[in-house]
Image (cartoon, rainbow, N blue to C red; front, side):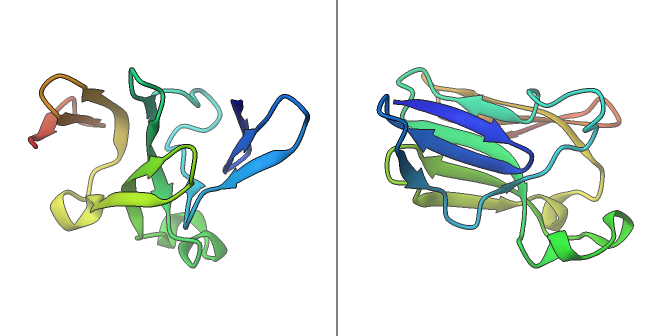
Length: 122
């Protein structure tokens, strides 16, 4: 199986060309869409979990300057189930520019537009 990305959507396909997973409430959000599409997506070493910057589907209908439901989603790749969600704007109003995850320690590491690093520890 393999992951495919199209606009704000993540899909899991098998080698027969069949879509096998739908991600719950998962609409990717790219703060610098014209420049970068990879710094706000992370796939764990075991390739079983995807961590990505998302917006609520309700927020996607609003103009870009009015969107407020930006969250970091942790989703199981095979099932598409959302395992956890961090409401970014509840912690910080700045724009996320990068995210990563430390598989060994369980730390979620997020960079913002001001060059600050935020760490959530497991």
